[in-house]
Every structure is written in C-alpha cells, then in structure tokens.
Amino acid sequence: MEPQIRTQIFPISIKTSDHQILENAATLIQEGRLVAFPTETVYGLGADAFNPEAVQSIFIAKDRPSTDPLIVHIESIEALRTVAINIPEMAWKLANRFWPGPLTLILEKHPKIPNAVTSGGNTVAVRVPNHQIALKFISLSGCPIAAPSANRFSKPSPTQAHHVWNDLHGRISMILDSGPTDIGLESTVLDLTQSPPCILRPGGISLEKLKFILPNVNTRTSFLTESKQKQISPGQLFKHYSPNAALLLFNGDDSRNVLAAMVAHMEQILNKQQSVGAMLVEEHLAFFHNLQQKGALIENLGSIEHIDIIAKNLFGCIRNLDSKNVDIILMHMLHDNELGLAINDRLVRASNDILWIDS
Image 1 (cartoon, one colour):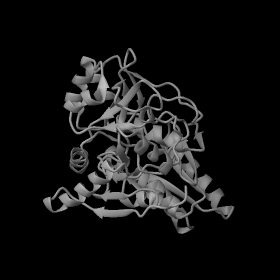
Image 2 (spheres, helix red, strand yellow):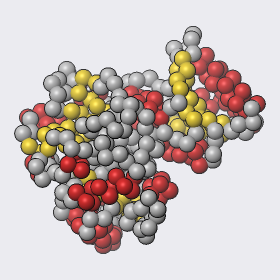
Image 3 (cartoon, one colour):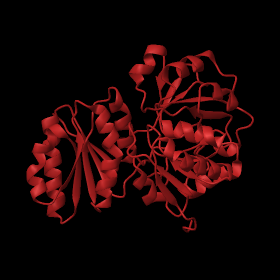
C-alpha cells in the first residue's frame, strides 16, 4: 500500500482543552476512517466496529491477514450486550473484577458485529480499556471500536505514539499521543467459549490473578504457524512481534552461565564485524561493560525486582535497537511467574532461536 493519507498527530491529555481533538477523532471514526489511540496496554488502531468497510481498512493499513481477528473495545461493562450474546455469568464476574483493564474475553458475537471483525468466526474478542483518553474517545465515537495494535503486522507493538508514526504515517488519518503506555504488553485473551476457559494469550492480567476466580483455567498449548489458518482471537500466530534484527534468546538454570554464554556469543559477533545489541535487566549490566567499550549496544530494561517496568520497556527497547540497525539482539529469558509469562511469550514469538545453556 502506497502512502496516500495525510496523517495528523496530536498530543493530548484528559484536560477539557483537548476535548475538541477527541471530538475530531470521533468524527473521523464516524466517517469510516482510522485513528490510532492510546490504551493502558499498547496503542490501538481504531475503526467503527459496526462498519465492515472501515474495519477492512485496518487490515489494509497494517498489511494484516484477514484471518487474524480484531479486539472490540467498548466504553463500559453494560455495553457488552451490544457486541456479544448468550453472555455467561462468569463473563460478568470477570468484567466486574478486571474491567476497565487488560483482559479480553472471547464470547459469542452479536449479529451486528461484521465478519470482518471476527475473520468470519462466530465469536468476538471484547474488552474495556483502562485509559481515560480511550474511554472518552469510544464514548464520543458512539460505537464500539475495533482495534488491533497500531503497528505494521508482525512487528513489535507500539508503546509510544512515535512508534505508530514510524509504522503507519501516510496510512491512517490521526494519531492521539498521550505519551508512553502504562503496561506495555497487550491484554490477556481469555476464551470463555471453551470449557474450562482457556488463556489464548498471556498479557496484562496474570495467570495467577485469573486463578483466584477461575481455578481450573487452562493455557494455550500450541500456536498457529501460518497466517492463512483460521483464528478465533488475535495473538495466535507463532511468529509475531518480530524486530528487523535477529533475536536470540538465552535460557538456563544458572544465570551466571547464561550471562557468560551471552558475553562469549557477543564477542564472536563483534569479531565478525557485525553489530550486536542486548536487552538486559539492570542487575546484569555490569557483565557487559567491556562489550560496550567494543561497540555493543545495550538497552536497560529495568530492575528484575520490578517486572512491570520491564514489561513496559520491552517493545520500546526492541524498537530502539532496531532503529540503530543492529544485526543481532540477545536477551536472557525471565522466569514465567506473573508478567514474566507474557514477556516470555512475546520474546519466544519474536525470536529466531532459543539457546539453552547447561549448568
């Protein structure tokens, strides 16, 4: 798709003085056009969920396969009845506990939801975002907003407005810029049409939190390998979130051995006159000081004691290293507890290889 659209970007806060910007954005939605907007997870690319032509333009702008369904964003729990039917009691219980918030529920779709949103399926993915700009934008638009992440398909998700601009300017009408997103990872996707319910994509609501309400919740055991395969929710493809650089993940029971292997691997890459970068937790930076002197590029993800900060920084660090045209990026995988499960999910699907380092 050749750039043809004049994209406007507007800094915005919830202040009354910015109300006109939101009204203009809502008017664009009503006209069937595309607006990128902030949520607490990542930036979304929104269209009127009831307008099949507008929804189809999302797929064109993103180069997204039509087999990959979209999440519908609504402004309130009560609005769930406008996009889903035969809603089970558990959905209301989860909504009252986690909405607004980063939990997407898979439910039976309402007849008003066009097939373009659900990729022809009979289920719909729905959530209420926990972001005042997003909620006001949806309310003013007067319709549910279908919105995947506002990036080119399969690339790292956008956590700042300039990420959206880099990927989609010339393809969409407007970007609402409210600064960095709070969580930095997409929502958890929970399928309530299965018994027992199943987490199809880990995200901002952890498995541990869901188990308080759903002790028997399952997790997905496999990914889809081809974009032409039918999907019931976003985030099901194995290859996703990928940088331009090759991403190598290192894992093992002994962190010191893993870090030593990473240092040795980076030395080899530098000796081959290739550029290399690493994404590191704060506690591991000292191991790589000498490599920085030799030209290795290092991104600090934050302290391992603050997994939420690491999650918030992850996609931005990947994009920063990509912008510096490194050939290879290395990272030590995290533990799978709490947000670590979602972080590792994104890393595995963005990676070219995973190296297990024996103790």
